[in-house]
Image (cartoon, rainbow, N blue to C red; front, side, top):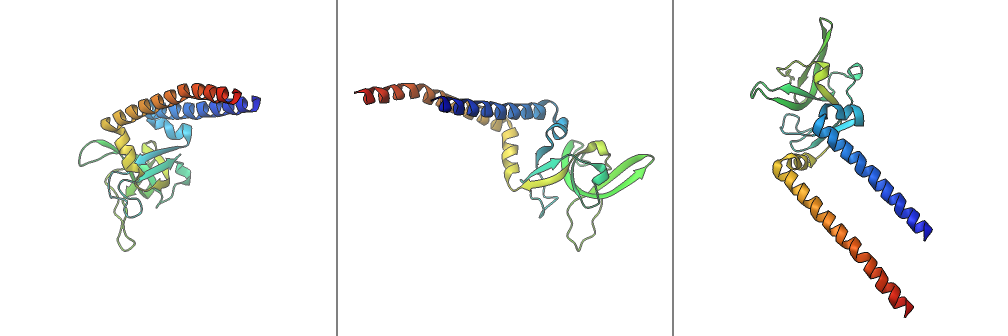
Length: 191
């Protein structure tokens, strides 16, 4: 009986630690998203365009890790913040490094989208500094970006909150029913 109680306590503590880490991660994502990669070592992004196909498809989830300029090379994939000339809005983009140059004591990074081996890559119109780079490409998961985009939408947020409420209610109801069932089983054994 003591072993069972110990196992339950260990499970409870483990669950609380995992929930605490997830809540901390979500808090970072909501309030200081630029620090997420530095603190946790990774951060996921949904890919919104076809600019990296067929290597990374629209709707894939790209996971980036800490960017180290000293280790960066032409051809590496990076994720960065830039203002899109077409819309004038700041967006998160994932492209290849086209060039890394020193200009007036500052490092300038140019990027390019995916090109076939037969094509000549052309640099994007934007010029980046190191502080605009969010992270270096680590890996990607096909189609999972669609799910993250849904969860970030108002409808997705509402769906998640409702589902958490329903699951919590089910767990509470199940736990309330357990002592009664155990008492019935014990009463049956005594007879």
